[in-house]
Every structure is written in C-alpha cells, then in structure tokens.
Length: 239
Image (cartoon, rainbow, N blue to C red; front, side, top):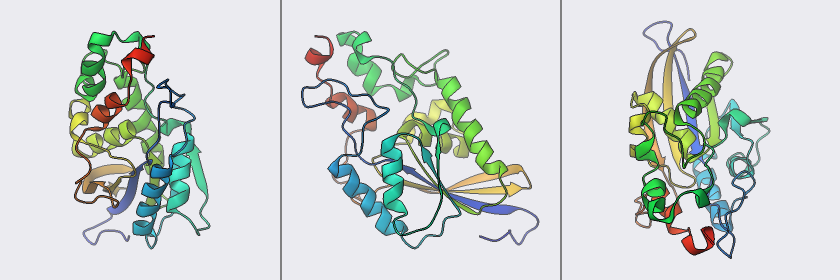
C-alpha cells in the first residue's frame, strides 16, 4: 500500500485474526491450563479455511501471542511462505481467575456477561486480570508495532479479548464497547490505519469477524462467552 495521494499520510493495513477452536475442558469437565491448550481438529480446519482466503495476501510482518493456539493458527495462514514469525507475550489473552471461585449462582451472569462488565470501575475478567491494565498492555504492544515504519501489511494472530480491545480502539468505543465486537474462532478483521509520520490520524474497520467456514453465521448463534459457559459443568467445577 502506497502513501496517500493527499499528502504525507500513509495507510497501513493490519489483518487481525483470532485463533481457531480449542477445548478449554478435558473429557471429565475439568478446566485445562488456557496457556497451553492446542487447536482442536475443528480449530485446525477453521484456520486452514482462513488460510485459503489469505493465500495471496502479501504480509510484511507476522505476529502472534506466544500461546500455542495462536502460533498454530498463524502457521496455517502462512503455509509455504518464508516469513519470520514474532511470538509476543504482550499479545497474550486476558487472564481469567479461577472459575471455581465464582459461586454457582453467579456463574452464568459473570461468564456470559463478562464483556458487559469491562467498563466497570476496577473491573476484572472473571475475577482475574483487570480490564484497564489489560487494555494498557495490548495498546502498548500495538503502538510498538505502529512505531516501526518498515511495514505496510501486518498479520496479527491473537485472542478474543485482544482483538476486541483493538477494534474498540479503532472505533473509539473503549472498554464499554467490547461486548459489541464478537470474535468467533478463526475470524478475520481488517483494519486500515492512516498515519502522519508516527501519529495515528484515523483507523478504518474494513472487515469484522469474518468466518470463511461459515460466512453467513448460520451455525453460530451464541456469543463467545455464552458458548464458553455452555461448556462448563458446574458439578465438576465446584466438586
């Protein structure tokens, strides 16, 4: 992408992707460590479907969080390319607290409604990492990417809440708008960022939450957090 004809402004493009499907609970219903869960077979197929869409898109940078599910998804998107991959801890998903510490009668409201609580003063994600600190971490990492002038097109593979923070930044929605930006598994968002030197002038959302394996969302009816809640077995959690 070239500099804009109107002047010195430069338009850069970010392809922002969420990882494919994973299982956060074992066959017995016990929570797995979210830092190490890999893509499921379904998640691998979803990533491959998105890889087919992006196969001819040129990328100058390829970045992902340092969690396995993000790197595995990225690998499917750049198959056959000789492109260095940057794994960044700053793109890690927001850290949840222990689900078993949430009383059973509050489990649905706190899990399914987690994003609605993001703008509450002192709010945290499922009694874990604070939203304000998480937002600062993600935007700091993204600003470091923008500060590097040597790229036009970047592929960034991360997580649900990470993508929501960046979409909310691009639209000016802030934490109070996070719940509106659904991020289904292996979804694609396309952001254009106009810059005047190191200064961001504006951001444009070209594509949001596109899923090539189900473009019309026929088989996707629940929100991300409603789906997570549906996989929890309270009897195992509070045993």
